[in-house]
Figure 1: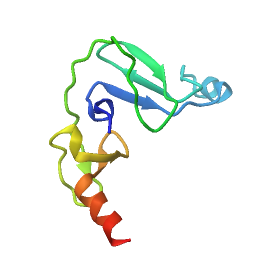
Figure 2: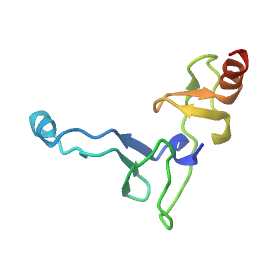
Figure 3: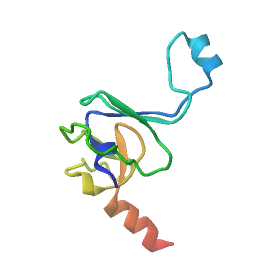
Figure 4: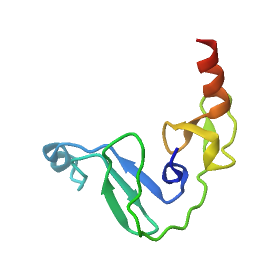
Length: 102
């Protein structure tokens, strides 16, 4: 689990077709794109794991997110098994329980 996904400065856009962006009237990336609002840097997301470019300024601040299953508040980035959105995540405790029962 990368810290970027649980940081207040991190945003992710899945990417839309240029024709749809023109229709909406908003400039949007055409490929999956990660952004750091603190450093003002964006980079293409090539896999599910967020890999931040080396050397960009970082001011990591934990985002307030709640587990989608148990409602637990994220206390540190290592609590998250999977980040679902900017408000929701799946915690390791719930994820491990689900994995053990199968």
